[in-house]
Image (cartoon, rainbow over the protein chains, first blue to last red):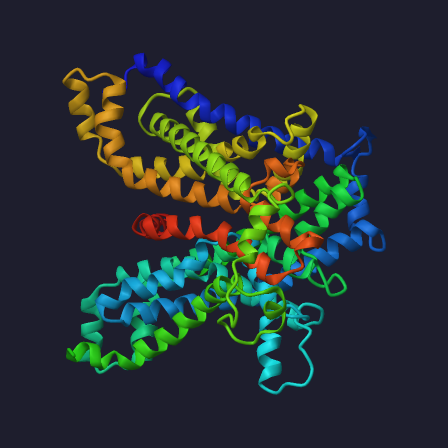
Length: 297
Length: 276
């Protein structure tokens, strides 16, 4: 073995920048957040005393303003997860299947076009969709009216249109990433399996169900997990396109935590909410892992 | 036309329709930026009837309230420095953890895995408070340094090194190569693809971040381009789709150009992250 004890000093030198950054910018804020969540802590005035579990109790007692913020935000966010994950995964798979079946010389150009919107920042995406779907002077309404529709659709100020706008913007923005992961998985599928299926006279659906699907299942699971995390972190689109409206129906959990911290100056309660959100996300992801592994056994 | 191409015509048609749908918002953004204010509010056609540059000249003349080029500089500076630090620091750490005797290795690896499972929102507001208490808000430090705590990079490189054979390193060592020579001549060339992946992921994460920069900056001069566009959306004097789209075009074009130039690497990066 060439790993001698003499390397110890080098190994410490190499690993320590990362460890220091990690402790300083991750472990320390995490510990501080837990500590703060047990205190009445203002952003401006600082620590106003230990309160034990009171912050958590207040968030979880129905009727308080913080309970309202937390539950509304959680419900809206879960709603978005439920409506966004299926299209973000299924349409991505559809696009990947289209590209996989195109003649080789066309693959790159279409792949690039479907993926290009991923390079645009969330705020630029919001600017574009805000003005595409604006109630007053938005392009989509202008087109619909010129086609003979009488009343403008209140895309941003009325449900379900507001969620629909957020959903369209999100799908347009991020679907290319999931598609790329699927394309890669499809490339790995052994072509001889398709040839064998052809010989057996399998149709397109049977080929997908019995050849493609088992081969891309694992990547598919990984994509679902990543998409759930991304949708849970909904913030920019609802902050900028609908600003939480109409009637707070698109206020995401992160937006409401931000309101608790800055709008209400309650860093203690905000930190408790963030920790609860972290726990909920971890539980949901753990449950998904459990489901996936249970099926395998 | 070749037979395979002819057979693919229905699929090509479908792909083309979807491609047009995907490109429409971008095409609309570009053309709207050349429309007059009144036309941009009322028009139902993509192309401008009257072409104007007033939206772009307007941006140049309002750089004091919306210093868009300063924002572009900030983003360039922050993403470049941040990405370099993350790539170097993570590669060194991953190499040490995968190949050398690091004291407390199990503890460090355990922390890395734990951190991967914990969502970022948990550390966001306390980290803001930390920077506020030490008086570093509105500087480049909070805009760069927190990204170095991400454990994703160490995890990626560490995993890669575990599956990479040690023979070359051992041969180099037996030939009397120093630790740095082994790193420079053997490890760096081998991990180039993973390093590129890490660079792309880090670049995109810093470039696209909106909430964190909005917490740690106050002044207009310290904003990133991503945050700056948000400020324009929320500002009252930009209730003007044409001018908004001109700003968005300026904000977006550098990223799209980088994306197209680095397309191959980005594709590979996504592929690499998707493997495991």
